[in-house]
Length: 262
Image (cartoon, rainbow, N blue to C red):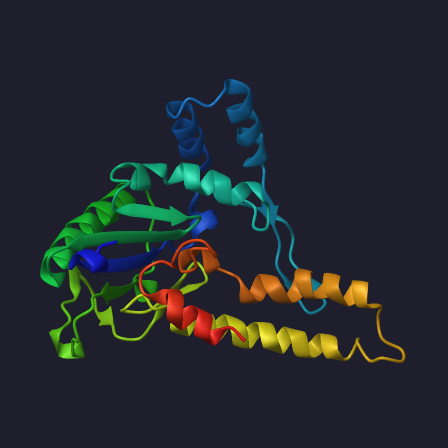
């Protein structure tokens, strides 16, 4: 791990604006063909993304249907997969630095100094923005965030930002959330564990109303409810910091994480 080797790391998160709504059908089909997907599948997806309509409802009034020139259906389990394939070139260009899921893109640079990290990330972001401009994919700059991971104590004024053309992203000194996981500057994951445990305890409190000894649910049903509704909240993202019973947790989280779990 970079911090254990005396290096620094910097994470930048970016959000695609509009995401599913910005997908151009014909361009999606071209990408799928270039990626080598079968003709039968690309034909199916062509029809899946064709002849789509929408209407607006406000209280009791509803407009007539109007055609949609682009976009993928919101709520469809297929849409996130197709969107990933649509922007695959962004991630494939440098998989060591770039990664993501759906419309959330992350860039991670590691090096001997924060300045070297920000220089690398500035170049990467510029390339991504250029690709977006060429392919009609816009990014929401207001949602772009950055955080430095280092064991050294740094004041806010000492933390370099990331510059990419006219875009400048200031590094955060408080934890940032990406894909539901909170990352802090020392990768202790304490804030993440505290947040998830608080949410899990809140869910458990709701179950207490169903577990009184006289008219409550059977113990087996309560156990299923806890496994289904409480544990997923408490353990969300645990893979990022907990290494299991037979090996230490990632980075410096072993003691901190375990001490927080009652």
